[in-house]
Image (cartoon, rainbow, N blue to C red; front, side, top):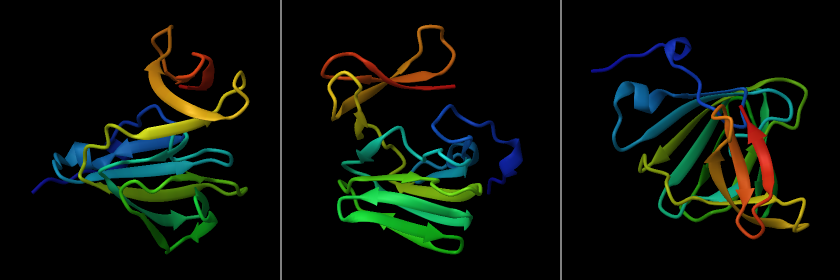
Length: 155
């Protein structure tokens, strides 16, 4: 058995105010479990994305998250959960004025190979995006794969 206090797990760099990889801290090998805190305007992911092999569930503990999907926006409030099948496009955001606290579960744990799209200021549309370390070494940037423009910066 493994046990961890959420407050003892370091937050990772992400578009959220806090992303704590609880599954990793617990030594989980087949399941990803992340604890998120989103301030107004924050997002769960780096862009509109899909995981080709990972099923993903979000359970909202506090606040209200809005998920952009292929079928339109879906609002998920405290005490509610939403599931995305492998290959299903989505991006969850906090569009409200209150903080969102949520758990995200993914299986299998490895979410590599995600297809991420962000609005590129140079291309004028959503384009495939890669996540890279910032030149200064602190933080991450998202880069358009069509024109190499930086589409986001995260610390």
